[in-house]
Amino acid sequence: MRIAFLGTGRMGTELALHLLPDHELTVWNRTVERTARLAEAGATVTATAAEAVDGADLVVTSLFGPDAVRGTITGPGLIPEGITWVDTTTVSPADADEFAAAVPTYVGVPVVGTLGPARNGKLGVYVGTPDEARRSAVMELVAPWADPERLRGVASGRAAATGKLLANLALAVSAQGLREALALGEACGASAEETLDMLGSTGLAFIAGMKGPFVRGERTTEGGDFTANAIAKDARLMIATVDGAAGASTSDDAGPRPGSDLPALRGALASLDAEIAAGHGEDDFSTILLPGAERTGED
Image 1 (cartoon, rainbow, N blue to C red):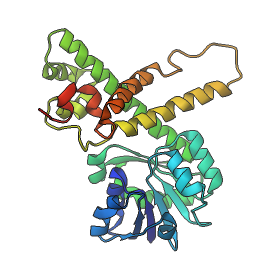
Image 2 (tube, rainbow, N blue to C red; image 1 turned 120 degrees about the vertical axis):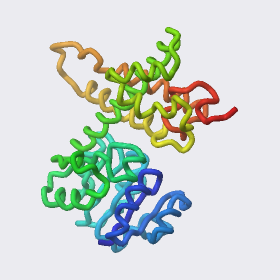
Image 3 (cartoon, rainbow, N blue to C red; image 1 turned 45 degrees about the horizontal axis):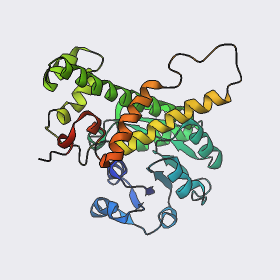
Image 4 (cartoon, rainbow, N blue to C red; image 1 turned 30 degrees about the vertical axis):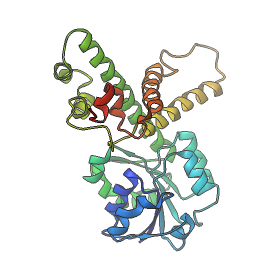
């Protein structure tokens, strides 16, 4: 197929590279320098998104968030009638509903994982549309991105968006848990390495293993796998989703469920926002775990 791929940031580039061996790829990014790797690999680069989409058999988008989708895709009515639109952007369920209503061929295809799994074709991938034939075709297309056991077809873009937000909520909250565990360990006289080791038999084992290299100083946060800006943006989508649901509820039979205002996520977002305000928004979100110069390995 001739595929238009719009949005070639860190994740978008990795996804697009997996499509190049089998498809003719035309790519666009607002910052043209970010198309360089794909151009070197054989993709055609266009100056505008409209040029990339012209004549395409299928469109893939990997944009920063729902506002970028509106500005690039649905606002200008970019998707030609009948052409499948595969959107990997992290959006809210309400956003997914909006996009599906605007473009009937919309397929929500958020990916779960960071750059390492993306390079190795081991991401979790949701493929969401009520059109079973289109869902099947898109699942075949994106199979090179996915761990086969984590490639899931679901009945709507809304369901796909929900799965992605749940995954990133778990990531943000567990990172905040690790931040607090490191603080508690330090207060108890344990080194960061000792704390990481003791967390190995707890519910924080996964995040301790994932972010341990940053805590130990084996990796710097510069050019990291998942930026503080990106996960903070996703956290705001989650909070807006819950706030919107609460505002839409007309039931006064019972009070809100404990935690229904997402206090743990709000705590994680506060930590992320502090790092963003300090100029570390484009660092890996592990920046919330590290003091001072340890974030970037500076002296």
